Length: 134
Image 1 (tube, rainbow, N blue to C red):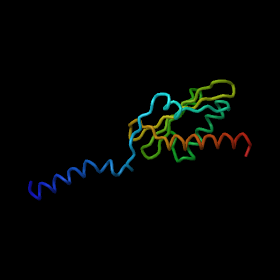
Image 2: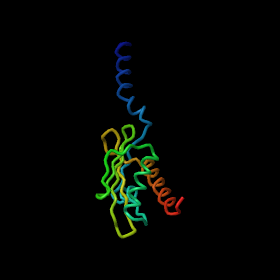
Image 3: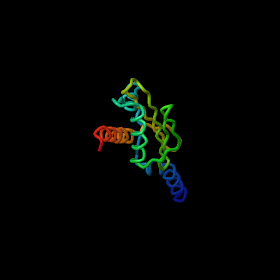
Image 4: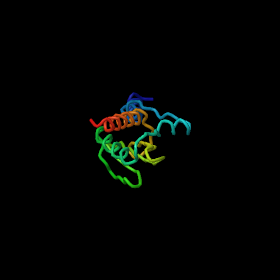
């Protein structure tokens, strides 16, 4: 192999590896279905209306723009720089609501645990603040 062909070979390998290197080395984790359900779904002791409003506020707090929402259907979709969150709310009782969050990036479904955790922490803070009336 000549020096020039070795250089071209190395350049081609770097070009193929660059997207992975620039993406922060995030690797996809394989979750079991029960682990995924546990990660993506939480229950809150609030009405579906209060929970929905807090979800929308939480998305704004995290810098997301609402793409579509349906309060009656319990669905919100939001985007932020190629990252998308989809939220589904289900009324389990008069004051009990389940919230399920799914994430995607660049059109690909991806489980982004830090983002899901940040969303649920923000949602819980908003709900508790609203409950206290502050």
